[in-house]
Image (tube, rainbow, N blue to C red; front, side, top):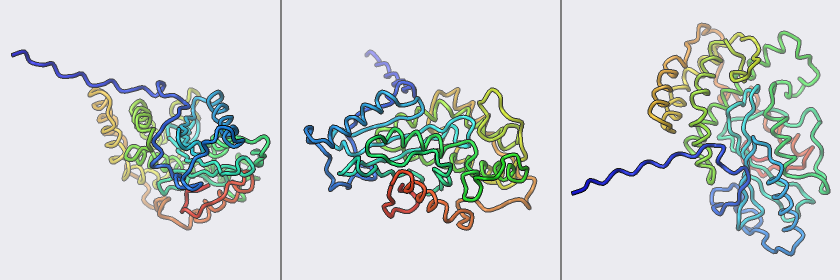
Amino acid sequence: MVQERPEKPMEAKKTMEFEQFDVVVDDTDHHFRDSNGGKGFNDSRSALYKTIMKEWKILQNNLPESIYVRVYERRIDLMRAVIVGAEGTPYHDGLFFFDIVFPSDYPNHPPKLYYYSFGYRLNPNLYSNGTAERWNPCKSSILQVLLSIQALVLNEKPFFNEPGMEGLSILMINVEKKSCVYNESAYFRTCKTSYQLLRRPPRNFEGFVSSYFRERADRIIKAGREYISGRVRIGYYSCESAPAGVHVSGDFKRWMKNFSPDFVQALRRNGGSASNRAGLTIIADNFCVRSDNADEDRVDPEESPSKGGGLFKTVMGKIKKYFGLKKTGKKNEVI
C-alpha cells in the first residue's frame, strides 16, 4: 500500500500581494449595512451611480501604498478602508479601519464614517489646524477625506491637536514632555487595537490583517522593547535617523508589562514559520520592563474618563465643521 504524501500547507499571502482597491461581495458585518433602507444604488443610468463610480475610479488610480479599500458589488453605497500607521508617529505599524456610507443625495451631503475603535479613543481634534478643506459637493472626494485622516489624525505629535495646545511652542520643555507622555498613551492604544484586530479582523480583510502582523511581528515586539527601555523615542524604531531616547514613565512600563503577554501570544498564534515563532519567544522574554517608579503610575488611559471624556466630542465637532460628517449616536465611534 502506497502511503499518501501529506499535502503541503498553502503558502500565506504577502501583504504586497493584496490589491489596494478591490470589489467584494460580503457586506454582512458592515456598520452601515442597514443604511439607505438596506439598498444600494444599482441604476447605472442615475447621476448618483455615476458619481460613486467616479469615486471608485479616483481611489483605484490614486491610493497611496498605506491605504487599502474594499467596495461592495451589491451595495455600491458602502465602502471599507484601512489606513496603515506611518513611521515616525505613535501609530506606526497599526491598522485603522473605517466603514463608510454614501448618502442617497451624495455628493450634496458628505459620506459618514465609522471608526473601529474597539472602545479606545483615537486622537484629539482631527482637523484642528484648519488645513482640511470644508466639504465641497463639486470638489471634495472620499480620497480627500482618507488622506486628511492619514495626515492630520495619525500624526507625529497628536498632543498638539488638543484644545488650547495649538499655539504652544513645541520647544517648551514641559510641553514637549507632556507630548511624549501623550504619545506613550497613543502607542499603547495602537497596540491594543492591533490585538483586537488579530482576534476579530473585519471581513474581506482577514488575510490582509493576518499577513500584515505576521510580517511585522518581529519588528513590533522589538520596537516595544526599545520604547519601554527609553532607548528609542516612540514611533521611530524603524527610522534611520531616530531621535535620541527619552525618559519613560512608570505608567507606560506598567501598561506594557500587563498587556504585552496577551499581545505577544496573539502575534505568535497568528503564525509564520516555526523559526519565526521561536524568534518571537526569545524577543518576548525581554519585552517587558518592570517599573522602577511606582509613584509615577497613573491609571490605564482607557480607565480614566477625566483624561479626555470630551475628547471624541471635540473630534466629532471638528469633523462636522470641516466635512459635515454627522454623528449617528453610536458610542465613541461614528464620525
